[in-house]
Length: 359
Image 1 (cartoon, rainbow, N blue to C red):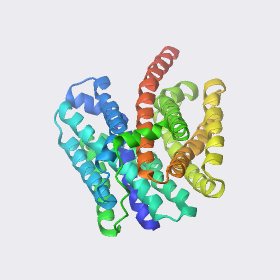
Image 2: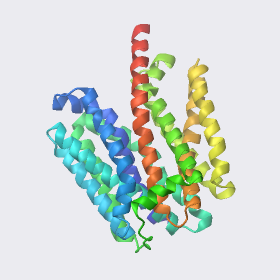
Image 3: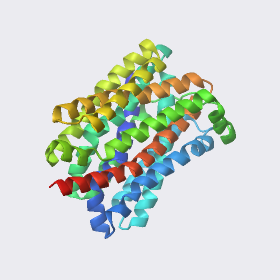
Image 4: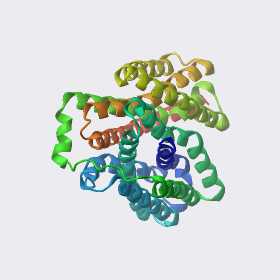
């Protein structure tokens, strides 16, 4: 069971690398395509919005498709989309590639989480969901730095080749190792959206949305902020981002234990409080590198614990259709990331201006 769930985590690792690495290779992409960095940045927004708006619709259209077949299709589409991005010679083709990649990701992520939950016994479901989401965390530690290094040394196209290769490995693993997973009953889009009228589901999704907006708002301008407050250079800032992801692994482990031991709600509430305190510390008391490092560690540990706990909570609230609520949760995640990127980019702009004036 655990090896199969690890294969699913390889898929989320590829998806996480694809989602986060773009920011690091945008300047090179913009230069080679003769477009502005701002315009190239729309590749991130297009991906996030396509995922967010498409997840519930795609889950409805794919309701009768077997779970293993759906995993294979979504990974195949994701591989093809990244191959297309690697050979793209125009911004228009890249936009198409990002839309296709978002569709593949929107199909894969909730399906992988639902399959992991189905494979695991009830008392180990939290650990199974945490392991799948660990792929996202590890992508911040290894995938994004590796993708940026490869892009800088061999061209940004090779970054997409790396992502396609990782996705293909997950594809082969699913094809070779996974059994047929019981298909949930088909549910209409109207029924899916009707879940939003359930107060407990709606509030839980709002928690996901708020947490992701906060995370991405701060994460977007963390680099300029570190430069201004701690006066770190590029290598130092990269090291902080690496440590952010590395400490996040501890958050995944803590979350897995806490969810199975004390339940989702008792895990989520203190984590939200800790993240809020970390952000307050960064805003009001960031006077030294040590203070900033402690705040970032608190944020990383608590922040990475929240998502699997949210998934566990949503499955408990709608056990008859876990894929439905997980697709809505995925929509909330990517709506939050798009909102955080837009809001955070404004903060990054002002932070960079202040840093420039200070020099």
